[in-house]
Structures are given as structure tokens and as C-alpha cells.
Image 1 (cartoon, rainbow, N blue to C red):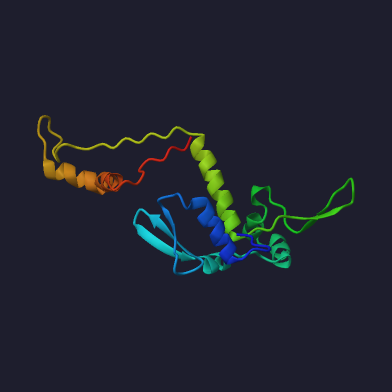
Image 2: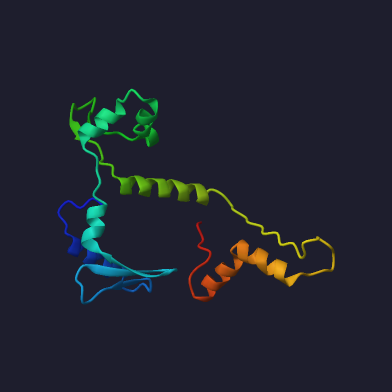
Amino acid sequence: CNVTNGSADSWCRKLVAKYSASKQFQAVKHRQGNFIVRHFAGPVEYTSAEFLTKNKDELSADVIECLSKSAKAFIRQRFLEHGRTFGTQTAAASGRVTRAKAYSVSSEFQQQLTDLMDGIRSTSPHFVRCIKPNPQCLPCKFNRRAVVEQLRYQGVLEAIRVSRAGYPVRQWHR
């Protein structure tokens, strides 16, 4: 989060304005600046002040420049990935000096998540679960205990339980 002139309370008000109609979001009335997100495992209360402070994690320009010129190839490579530009640049035509975008852990995570979703959207994933009807693999013989055990270990029973609770199990990514 890059908060230039905003405050935690104004950010929380923006969240409430945008997500108040959602079943997964709830503002905490008696604690200003707090909100609840209902995850599949249960509701979690967040404090907007701590949330924003935690995500202000930018590296200074000096540190970035120093690390990008490291003698270690591995460290140098971290700052050359994704065609990112750090520090300041001078435009060749106008001679104008511009400042590069500030990178933080959260902005890096957001970029990686975007790249992952682009990769997922460019594929057509299919999953097949094979269930053996019995440990001996004999025809016309059904071992209920063995089948239930396989379904439990593969997460099928948990997915059914989550689905019945009303949470989306499959989210379309196209």
C-alpha cells in the first residue's frame, strides 16, 4: 500500500464504501478503523492502522542501487527481474529526470499474483481423481472404507463440506 496523504481511517472508510454490500466484509461499529473479513475458516478482524503500517515496506533508493550493483550474481538478478527500473532516469530526448516507481514487498507480491493469474488464464486446467474401488483392484468388489479414505486424503470430502457451507469451491479464472 502506498499511502501518500491518506490515513488509516480514510482507507477503512473507502473499504466500507466499496465492500459494505459483500457478505464477506463487515465494518466494526464500536472500534473505528477496524473491519472483519469472513474467510472460509472463519471471520478475522483487521485493524486498518496496523494493516497499512505493515505494508509500507519500501527500500530506499541507496539500498536498491547498492544491491543492484552487488558482486553476487544472485543478488543482482533479483533487481534485474521483470524489466523493473530503479532509481532515477534521464530521458534522452528532453533531458528530463524522472523518478522510477517505488517497489515494496506488497507491490512485488501483487505483480507475482498478476503473473500467476495470467498464466492460469492462458491454460485449460483439468484434474482427474482416480479412486480404487478396493485395495486388490478386483472387478465388481467395492470396499467402502477404502474409498472413503481415498476421498478424505484427496480433499474431496472437505471440498464438499466447504461447498455445502456456501463458500465457492471453484472460481472461474477466465
